[in-house]
Length: 499
Image (cartoon, rainbow, N blue to C red; front, side, top):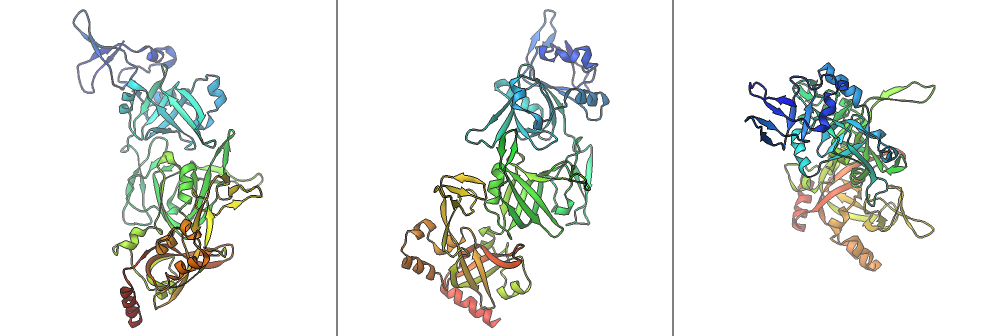
C-alpha cells in the first residue's frame, strides 16, 4: 500500500501497489518508495472500503519520476540500466535474457546515447494511455521490456529492434527540463545575438528551435535536430555496413559552406532518397541531422585524434531539400534574381539564375542522347555478361531501369554564352517529350524534336561544378521553365543588347 497526494495538497489517498512494482519496496531498492517520490498514473479506478474510505485499485499504468540531480536516483540508474541498444544481439533475445535500457523518447521511437541504434517502444490496447505520461525529449529507464530483433520484410539489410511493454516491464521517467541547463551558442551567421539551446542531463544539445543559421564549423558532439545549408562537394556511393551479419545501406555527402566542410553519413532510405537528387555543385538543405559523441580515431603508432560524426536517418526525422533544382524559385521573382550570363561568369557565381535562349544542343558526355539509370538513385546502370542489371552507386543488382536524357545546351542571353550539362528531368520539361517516348522515335524524328528547341527561351538555375579529379570547371542546368512566347524572347534580347 502506498499513500498518494497532489503537490501542495493536504489531502491524500491510499493505493494498492501492483505486484509488478513490489520489487521497488525490497531492501535491494533502498528507500526508492520514499516520501515525496513523484509518480504519474493513468487508467486507474477507485473503490470504497467497508469503513467508507476511498482507495485506488492497483494499475500497471504507472511511471516513476527520477531526478537527474538526485544522487540516489543517479545510483539507481547506474546500477540497473547499463545496457545499450547497439549491443542487443538476437542470441541474447533467444536465451530470454532480461534487459534494462536508458533511452530517449523521439516521436514513437526511443534512442539511447550511442545514437547509432533506434528501437520502437510498443504499447498495446490499454497500455496506450502510458504514452500520455511522458513526452518527446524525456529520458525513459525501461526495466525488463520484451525485446525482439528481426529483419523487415523484403529488406535483408534492415534490422529493427522492438521493445514491448510486458507484464514485468516498469518505466521510470526523467522529465526533460529545458530551463534547467541552457547552452549559449553565438552563431557566426549572426554575431550580435545569442540564443539559448536546451541541453539535457546526457549533454545532448537540441537545435530544433534554434533561429539562426548553423554553420559547419559550429557543429559539436552530441547535437540533434541540426539544419545545415551548403554546396555539395561530393556524393559518396553506397558503402553497406554489416552489423552482426545484417547489411545496412550507408551513403555519404560532403557539404561545404563559407566556414568549412563536413562529411555527412545518411543511413538506409533517407540516404538513398537524398543522394538520388543530389549532385556535385547542388545547394542542399539538410534538416534533422545529429552528431555522435566524440570518439577516438586513428591507427596504431600514429597520433590519435578525437572527432565526431554527422549523420542522418529516418528515425531522427532527417530530410533533404535540393534548392538548386527547385522550380519554385524560378517561378517567383521574389525568390530569385535574374542575372546576365556575362556577369555571372565574370563573378564566378556558384549558383545563378538567368533568362536565355537555347542556341544549340549536343549529346551528353557519354556520346548519346539517352542513357539507362536506376530509378531509385538516378545513376547510370551497367549490364553484366549474364545480361543482369547492376547499379554501381547502390552496389546492388536491380530488376529494372528507366531511360533519361543526357544532353548539353548552349545558352545565350546576348551578353554571353554558357555551355551547360542538362540536369535530371530538366530536358524532359523543355522538350515536352518523355525519354521513353523519345527512344521509340526514329533517328530523324528524334533530331526534329531536339532541333525544335533551338531558339526557345528559358529561365534556368545554373550551378558551377568543379571536378577535383580532372581539375576542370563545368556548368549544369539544374532547373528550367519555358518563357512565355517568342515575342517576349525577342524583346529580352533587344533589351540586353541595348543595355
